[in-house]
Image (cartoon, rainbow, N blue to C red):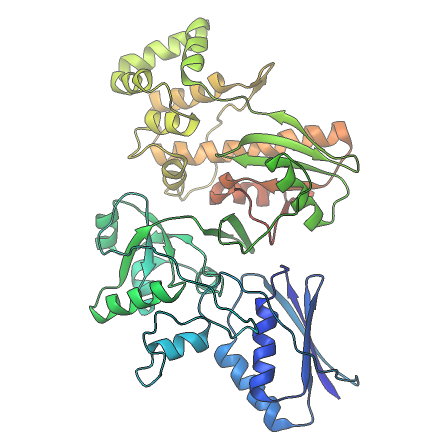
Length: 468
């Protein structure tokens, strides 16, 4: 008899299977492990109880968690074991528990060895370090390296599921709520992107900081692997580490990503919502013929929008009233006509910064349910920026709190997605929906789709990044 485990693994990456092979080798048990089509199949001989116990002990101690892990089904079957030797490619992942043990053990030959390379996932060559600079001093745009993991619940409001993601072998960056008042004061933020030590260099920096009773360090955020955890979904927003990959299916990078996600979902035809700060907002279609844009937001031009509002009888009165009450805001807009949409909104809301991230963070401060009705209309040339920004100005004039107004903006984007896709569904007779774009980093937008579009079962990629 043999023990058979079928492990769901929503990635083609081979390192987790490699870790299992390494544990088979270390335990000396007769077994095999293979990976194919989103599943890892592990088969172990159950005749030698001592080796089976050693395998189990090693797995508990040295097998890391992965963001791609799914359900595990275990059975006992009368099948022949054909031992194999699985070999993995090398990946830019974190240090495994075995490496961390020898790196931090004064009795080990590799204690504080900055040349240590992980080869514990049946790979031949370890991945090399980066040159990131870590400092106890915060500057705008920095992420936080958690030096003392025992302090995590004192510093942040973080769920068990978010911890699993943070400490996974992929070592992503996640955004969390700051609990510690000193850290709030240092950063001037309520939310911050954090990362666990993710390679030899960062681990050694964290060890030195911890020895000096420093719980965290800062570093310039390179957005190498940004992940959000929303309800049960673990979603990769950006990936420059190479944890995910795309097949070349289209010359257009947005359509190519859309086709890759549609392929992952198993869709022959699909409609997509691309909510991207970097690549703009668009609605897409794929079928057996190919892929195309159905609707694309035109480029936002602040000067053009203000001129159009001035030429509209109702909106010109709104602008006059707004300038009368908030002359400093209008001065800023007129002197910064290169502002994009989100910088413009931040200026109108008088937030402490000008970016999508600043607006997104502000929206998370509202803890209630149900936002205001922000206009998200379309006109002949595309999205009606005048109506959209005009309704935000109207609520600002009415004294609506900034965090509630920011929250309402992301709710409105969610409702716009749902309304638009439903109209496209009726026109094109397609019922498969794909979500993508870095704007889904905002939990309010993400949650709105999950709750209000639930019956349509929109697809969120499991092993493909949402944006560049």
